Length: 523
Image 1 (cartoon, rainbow, N blue to C red):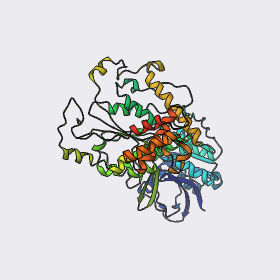
Image 2: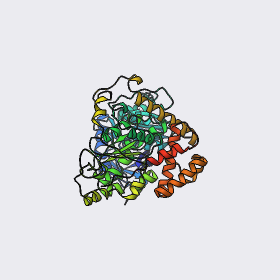
Image 3: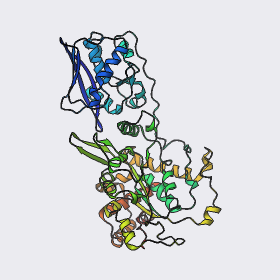
Image 4: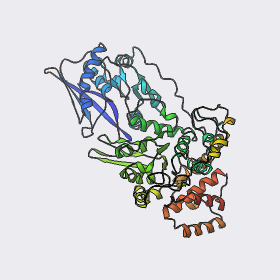
């Protein structure tokens, strides 16, 4: 007799169906697993045997062979523990093949028969839906993520014994309660986020605040240069609290990426990610890769913010590796066992000092760096990378008089949830939300922004008045803009017009967009 059980495993950003076949032979008792199985899967033999025994079920006293098809697909992870155990239970007579029809199973088994959560659960469910399965059984701890997907019945399993009783019709498993999906709040009532970072807590730096609002409203990349203590890092930290909650489609994508990274099942998908890797991070940890071609920080920041503090302290290979993702918003990783692509649609917010000592252009602290030191320091940031950053601003140290005279909540105290307690932050929230609503209507989707306008779409989405077109021609000639910078200026102008509620790009919008193409201070 042949037992057949279906499962799926993550395969890059997608999932792949796996057919588990089992058979027995009259020979000395042994248990073999074949079909390009990794060490994790071959070790499943002991987990499965112990789980079946702990569940008071029978293990065949024959030679048992389990085949994982397709045989040429590299299989790794503990996702196949549960379906392998079910295949063996069919061989031992505890279950029938008919009990498993149109059902797909995934989960790791503990030695006592409990079902543990696995990573990549959304990939597994998407593969099952595409293959036409109507019931999917997953670990109960994976249900919060699994239920983000609709159109298929998903049932949580706590133990192997519980699942067997359900499949035999003795004790049905309880259906999970409906999932509470956090909807995009861009059109709803505004409230302050529960955090310690608000715009009102930043003293001065009006230009940096304006650039931050524009960057978040259109999902543009932002680079802030300035001396130590100017508030660059605080400005970036505030950014994570100015974006609305992700849409249901974005929640699925966020949960999918974080699950693939091996993170514990959680509700991380209900808010946009804010990733801030240290400058000592390796290229693989930022870009992704390794033996299993896992997603890196740029993919974990998908639909959120990637914050690179002290940008020029990162190794140059790491910065150069950002070229493709900043332009294409995806990252492709090639390994001997396959080619994988992960999304990387993030907002880059980076900070840097203008020189190694940090005081270039600071009137209160003379710069002690030589010209060669400054050139070597800035050489890490190549022209192509700088050209891919939409807004570049220089900030100066806040004057002592502004620090003392300006009234703002202390940074270590959380203000009241009353929006009136932080009027600047609340106003920015409303402006960004309104701009995002205009973009969702313009592009007929909640997952596309002004930063993604293609050159062929500029004429349709960025209409220029005659006076604006004349100003643009003068700017191109005077500033010697590259083709990439030209389109970025127009996209930023589109966002500024959205913040002003204007359908047409006016000279004032274009002038402000051009002002954010600043150059770094000279020695």
